[in-house]
Length: 271
Image (cartoon, rainbow, N blue to C red; front, side, top):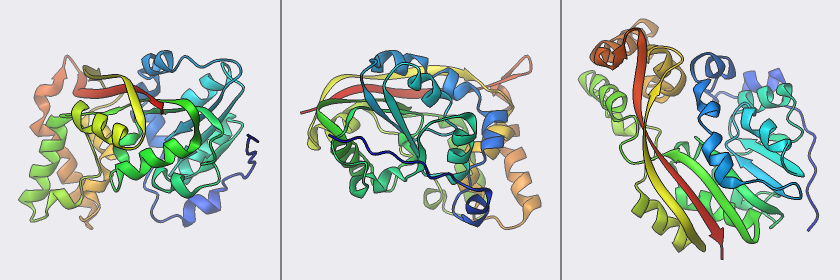
């Protein structure tokens, strides 16, 4: 199988013109630097080999992509955010492109060329049609290729998610309409994988109390922007964020803020 080469660079103009892209690589570095650091166990589960071609799905700013590039023959990094892919390109990722995981199934990358698809802290953002994402992963993989990932799982970030739901409901909004996350349990996601041609080798739901790089307000500003979208007044948005932080003041221990993460980590093989 011929490996597809791609060299298109994301420009600042493209980022500014993408009204749907609410991600900020600057905020991500400031408020979420712990995310790639905590991705080490899933890289270990992937166990990349020097001869392999790997797809990094939801690569963000490319920190883990760069690590993978040192370990295997080639890595293609994809992310739905033009701003994050621009950051990945600026960081030195050799092949980083804007691709939404939902669109992967019909993309030129979906030609059975990859030995593995890797994903860290990204699949839970692909809520619109998770099964379609899995189908796209399958089409990208060679027979016997592996899908190794970690994402938010059942009850992930329940305290801050609940506080955001309460804040929106208090203001007359339906939080379900603005909740961007899909946090499946092991049984749910195992069935989705098996229904789409994968054999699951391992799947674990792992509790992980996570110390933040910032406070709850910074976390919400980085990850909870979808909940704030229906609120047009900037001052009211700030009040929502502060209200959530005040609700969760018990999450601060001696100046360090924490959120209880639940991570779904798995390895599955394309049959």
